[in-house]
Image 1 (cartoon, rainbow, N blue to C red):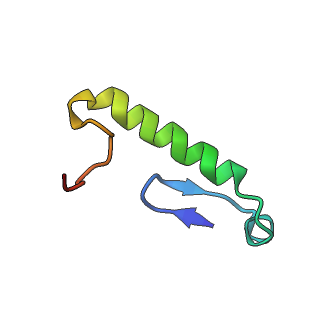
Image 2 (tube, rainbow, N blue to C red):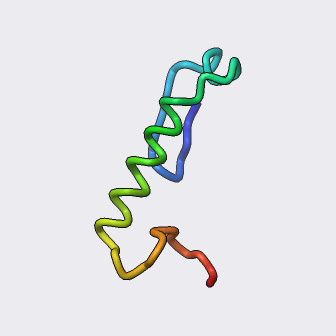
Length: 51
């Protein structure tokens, strides 16, 4: 399973299909927290978000 937005690749497709999403969720949280630290003026850290 690959999330190209954050550059994450997991070789655990069967686990993801079974609903074991914690590794994906953890990676997304880490990515967006790092983005927010790099760009604190963006508010919520969502790149390209329309207010």
